[in-house]
Image (cartoon, rainbow over all chains, first blue to last red; front, side, top):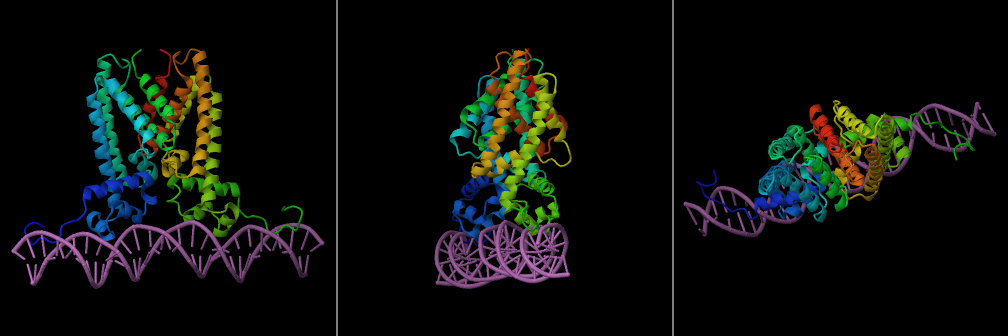
Length: 200
Length: 200
DNA sequence: CTCATTTTGGATCGCACAGTCAAGTAAGGA
DNA sequence: TCCTTACTTGACTGTGCGATCCAAAATGAG
């Protein structure tokens, strides 16, 4: 609808970049506490441009949350398939979260923050978070099954239960990071969690 | 200051009960999303009564958070000292959280919600949460040391690291509960966490 | 150039919010 | 009984919010 007729002035800002900047603000401050003025300043665009490009604050947030999940989910899956053994790959994911939660600004995980901010009160946000969670569950379960097959993980492990446990551990790590926990604390959490899965 | 002179009209509402009701609202909705009108309706008192009795919304929240920690902390410590063996007491705490998180309200943990809502931006809230965290850490570490002594826990366990891990696991459980996880999921998380600490 | 369309900034609306004020009211001491 | 005190009640204020509107400037296609 914009290609067959006279094209007018082109967009002057990079939509993806603006979205990423908005994501950073929401990640830091949550939904309610992030004001539109703050968002616009970070995005570097005018008011009307934001409303034209994204609809309203809520839709901007939903898009930012989806963008977060896509970006950081892809990161994790890459890391999972990269390492040598499945259990050390999982350990790598936990330790990486522990490591980067320290030097980074302490924002925790945007999806976790969304969960605690909205609880079950917002169905659409809940669905977005849930889809990410179930992707993680199946990925972890697959890695754990392979770890069992190779004898790295305890043979009596229920991989589905352990996958749920691992995801919960990541959530705990992220919240601990946001609460300002020291790097040693995060490292301890990750190490004990993985050691508990390891074959004796 | 109210006893040696002419006493005027007495308070008509129960301050503790009002505080508890406010706590419920903050627990459900967080700080920002809880409006004063909503709080007053739940507390069953008038506007001015709240300002007289508690100062302002922020002080009310701080008091509610402290009340939450005192009440639920005491609950946990009682449960910890109650059971027969230290490891099964710890298991009992996790499973109890998993069990009671299944109620229809799904509020998670108020302290966790406070952490994710404010991050490190509010020092006073951070200090309140931190004090609760460190109480938990020392309690868990003591229980774990005793469990090791009795041969219930793995002998190679670093009890301080494991205590940090257990606390993080509780955090993960609470967030999972708030996100609407099924009871089996919560049960799995608790079981895998404890099994990882158990002596082979 | 001309026109269609978008960007941009300012002005403004309506609303919900936290917090305040003042008048009304009840309890207890003298 | 009357007076002091302070709690209660409801109306009110100022502020900041998200969202909309408007008009001028900008820009590319025909």
